[in-house]
Length: 266
Image (cartoon, rainbow, N blue to C red; front, side):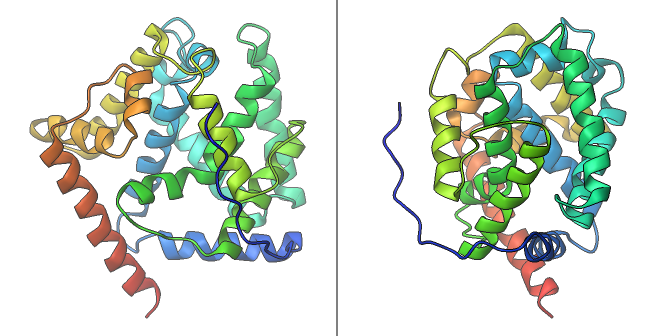
């Protein structure tokens, strides 16, 4: 088990309405005026690549090579992105979000008959989605969120998890970080599998096919892999890109993020 993370300062618990307002503000700040669809698909791809490092998550996504990620990968991406954006737009505790969260939960229950998830894996998923943007940006040396924004992201994803009947979720940002680290450091839960490697390859192929001409597909692969931690790459059966490409990718992300923040604050 990893060492406990330092305790964060206390932040006042927001109302559901205030937390939703903060989440919408984060989304506006992080979404470029040009390339919003690209950014959303990049986040989806990076997030699901990390999910398929899970032994259980990889099996459920891959389904022995017959999963939707292989049959209709672009539609799966669009559906997932639409759900996530809907929850931010309306607020995770809203009646509108409840309807779509319940729909997702019914899908989980259906597939769990063949690919059951442990409680630990459900908690890992909520922790990952809470932290995903920060995990990516931190790799590039970007400190993107205030304490209040971190607390709102925790509240947002805790509300979604509670609606899905996931119990004992961490209540703080550092608690989410600890849950993420503990899970991903345990080979019981997080390790290389054929299903994880197949799924990661499918995600890389789909991202490249959607956004890049074929001559740039090797570069697209390197960019995606440069935005993961080494332990995630190991779990999804991918070798780290050359160090110079990792540095260039993360520097480019810093530049793009700084430009987006300037545009968003005009």
